[in-house]
Length: 440
Ligand code: UDP
Image 1 (cartoon, rainbow, N blue to C red):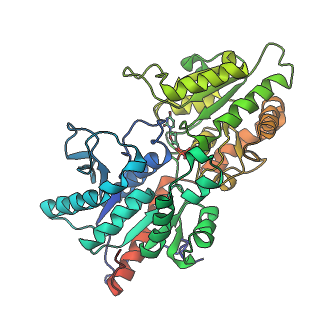
Image 2 (spheres, rainbow, N blue to C red; image 1 turned 180 degrees about the horizontal axis):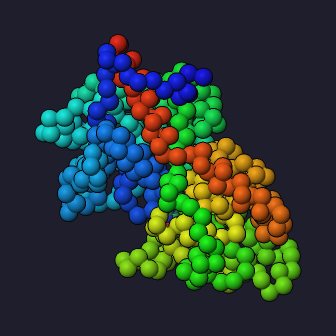
Image 3 (cartoon, helix red, strand yellow; image 1 turned 180 degrees about the vertical axis):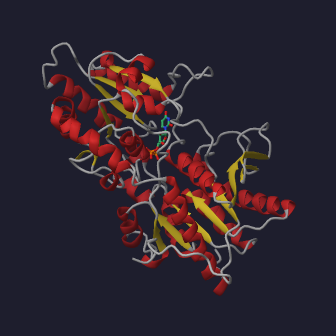
């Protein structure tokens, strides 16, 4: 398959070398606290990929929209990696559906920044459709090839969304348009690649398959008993959920399935506890803020009669998450759609089995019956049955625990960044030989 990165070659003397990359993350910063409505896998991805690229000697500037008046224009995150605050729209949080009209300003301010700094970029890498559009507008100013990563695609979200949560026609149109005008597209898994070809009309040789990675040093198995004690978790089986509070995450299925799990068996005084990680934390970083989203979930848990068995822990730092994963008997990812599902890979890296929906990237990262169980999405009964199997069948649980880490080590960031440099290099070579496509 073209775009698949088996043939890694040293650039020859004539090939342009990748020295500087502009990474665009318009609507959310790679250093934002995670677990909020707009901060999850993409933030982790941009942060990790940029760090790993910087370690290979490439200068990476990550551009994000300014959200306050106080953060300096340039933040040096580590050697070779800078975070640039871009002036576009009001300097406070704005819903992402209202950001499109500020994208021209975003592109202009980026161009101005490059002019002031006297730098040119060899590649412009856009994340999410808003950044993809900014990358295209930049072609008016820069002659650098663009790489687009969707992270989520509107038509896939809409296929499983209720009317209130449907993505806009504008987003659907821009996502199609980005296929025509981007120089390269990154698909995180074969499913996403298929969608790009069949639903967005992308030519297959424009798509490069590069899965995201996991920090295998941070996400390692810890002693489960010590982890439980440190996190002050109750005795009995622990089912863990980690993720943003978003309809696509299937939290309704999770609650209904968990209720079923509690009801369908006599747990003889050792009922499972659902530990819910996600939502915001207060300023001390200690307690979850029961803002609208978490309060609503608490209310739903009360209505279902499961509140005594659900622990809401708010969002957690990456440093704490390995403890949560290690303390859990099973981590569940009941999403309706998931382009990759970093949580599943992180949990597996900690040796924790998964019960996940058979959707998107989860079909490739979770090895069914080897590192976890795949169940149909939006099906509480199937979810409950999967969870019960893992919690009560010791032999299965041992097999899955052993298979989990093995499944996760296929996704190292080092491999991902090496593959990405190869994509950048290919596109730079093509660009050197032919003019770039310009958005009109
Ligand atoms: N995450 C985190 N703290 C939280 C909740 C989530 O660090 O409280 C991280 C989680 O570890 C994972 C990312 O956010 O790396 C979520 O990525 P995933 O691909 O699972 O979901 P997405 O947010 O992309 O839908």
